[in-house]
Image (cartoon, rainbow, N blue to C red; front, top):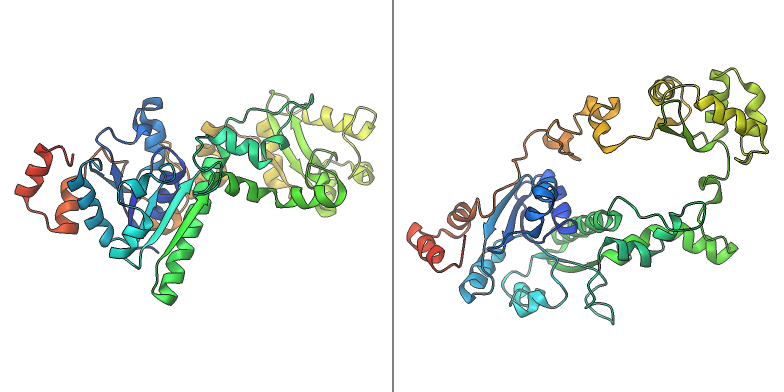
Length: 371
């Protein structure tokens, strides 16, 4: 769908690379510009963080601290449709690659900056990580244990939500350009992207004082919650609508439970106690099979390594045997190239995009301008 769209990617770690991964999966040509040291994610966790987000891209190495390296970058940008960067606010301007400079040579470019707290205001120069963005968004306060202590997530939600927001803004920019012919600038804040998920919570708290969003979705009724199974696994039951609760009860031969649909999950509720015992009488796998046979919103709580064998993902080939997750595989199944080695396509891109001679490439290599 994005065949012919060329993206220059100056991002590292997770949010930006996840953004351009999605664009690459949609068919865009993504040129990942790396420093001589490479994306730091190459060196984290045996490079697995890098490999997870950079398939289907081309890597070139440019030394942007050298004037000639910046000139090469501008020559590439002049031919591009999209530029995305995730440096701290002001860095691209110092390099002579800010939107003002870029727009002067390529007015049609869609330029996206991924930031923590935007590019203006008191917090714009502060460093932060996913846990900070989760904290200030209000989202982390929704993940508390029974004592009221926030639970440390084992997923970097803000990184990925920010990446989704950035890809959405870039696509909107491309659509707008198709209408007007003009490019645009977009600044995506990870803190704001995460906070945008709090729409229910903010309004409900303002109107009612209740700080945890839609109350019926918060483990306050027996038909919408998590239950432990015989083998110490867990399943999620989300039979919120009467038809699903009815299907669940009838399949178990427990029509006497129908009236307890929205009752509380506490030990003084006999139906809840029976439900807890019921789930503990079968394994997670057995309940998973039940949930696929009975339309009652019952699914297993899967670990990461179990996705590849789960029937829904398995029949789609959504998770590959080598551990890659392909969101848009239905459009381009199996077409993505492996994550590139650092600078693997430097020469190829310079020849194809800029018609650079081998002699010039050799000269730049000796000067440490490219790699």
